Image (cartoon, rainbow, N blue to C red; front, side):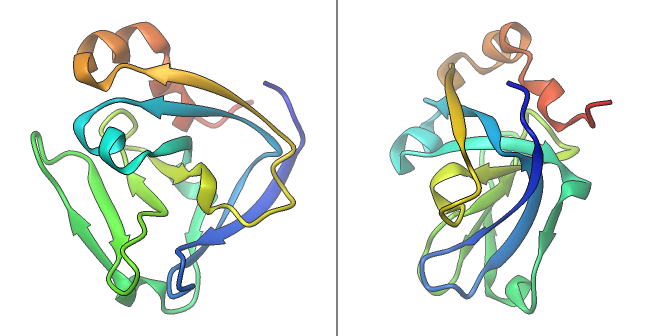
Amino acid sequence: MEAETVVHNGGCHCKSVRWKVIAPSSVVVWDCNCSICYMRGNTQFIVPADKFELLGNSAEFLTTYTFGTHTAKHTFCKTCGIASFYYPRSNPDGVSVTFRCVDPGTLTNFEIRNFDGKNWEQSYNETGISSCSKVQK
């Protein structure tokens, strides 16, 4: 999906965690069925890490959960519990932004794609998800 690049703002429910991300106004959103994404209903889009910035004192409100390979760093707000972004196993050079945590008004279109997290390695190899955190030239 090609679209103009814009600044998206977002964060958690209580607004203790705030961030901005530079990404297209039209994004590919991944719907994953791995154990954690399935349970929290996560849909996400992935950006290069240098396109994501935590704002203000947000870092002091974050805590991190890991499991399995401990590669993915699942961050969430200590106050309200919302996981508005995390550092994904599929894209260690990127940030996975929770689609529903983007403030309204800057996302104009999205395409939902499935990622079979129950069969992680196969889905990783077949979907091309690893390219999402690469800077597009």
